Length: 164
Image 1 (cartoon, one colour):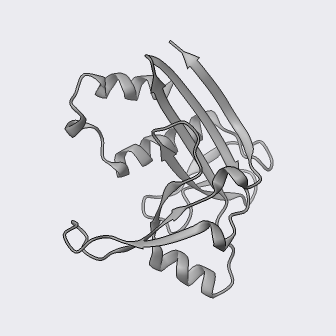
Image 2: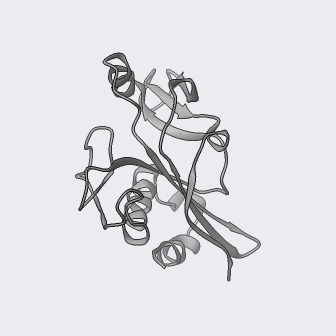
C-alpha cells in the first residue's frame, strides 16, 4: 500500500525531517485516488492540478468533485482546513462548502491503521475560523478548521486497521 511506502521512507528520520503538511496532503490525495472510487458513480477519481481552488479530486465519469484532507491520526472530529478567505467568499455567494474526503492514517503500537471517510455535506456551522500569530511564517493569516465532523453524516470509503 502507498501508505506503507511513505511511512517506511520517513520512519528512520527524526520528526524534524518528516514531510511538511503540503507534502503529506499531496501523498494523501495520491493515496485517495489510488484506493477510492467515486462515491457517486464508482468510476476512477483523478487529482486536480496543484492549487486548484476548493477541490483536490474529481471523477473521470461524472461531475463529482471533493476536497481531500489527510490527518496523521485516528478519526477525530476536528481537522485543519485551509485559508479562510477563499471559503468565506464561496459561502458569501451561496455556493455550498465542497464535499470532504478525509484520509486518516496512524500507527499505534507498531500497527498501521487507515480509514477514509466521506462527508457529503459540511454546514457552515462546522467551520471555525482562526488567525495565525504575528510571529508565524505567514503572520496573521486567516485559516479555518473543520469541527464536529464525527457528528455529521458520513460514509466509510476504506477501513484498514491493525496491519503489521
